[in-house]
Image (tube, rainbow, N blue to C red; front, side, top):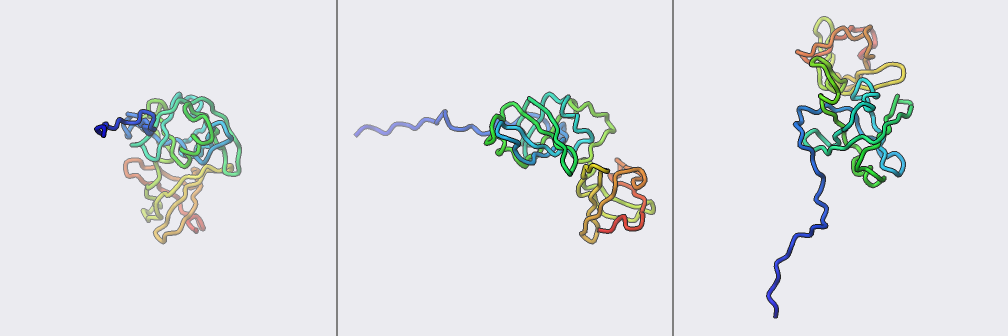
Length: 198
């Protein structure tokens, strides 16, 4: 009976994703992948995390993953836009994502870019940065916390989770937003009848 032979690793096995070596603190969320678009690997992106969807046109590279600590780098191959009832959707083509199966694998993940690539100023904020901030009136009465930011055709909206665990919408315009206090991480709003009604 021949002696057993040692098993060798299967070089053909999928090594898994090649996570990017980039500090999470250097990354800024710029979008969310809704789902695949078509059969050639294009992705439908919600760009509401950025103030300007056209930023995708100047980015050479993005990072895709469930959170900033586990992202894969992709060069941008193509950018185009689609108008929807919710606003503008970005149709993004990425190197390395070439068919619908590849696109399905990254659906529901976030899209990040580095602060350097975005050319952000030290005091520049993205809408996504405001999630979790406290919303107060001029008198200091707490109205809730920012739960989401929605980019709408007529006007952008802050979604606020109230202390009663309901949601209220605040238009992101000067008539309602008095101050965005980055140091205190709070937004001061002008109370108007019905403003904080769910």
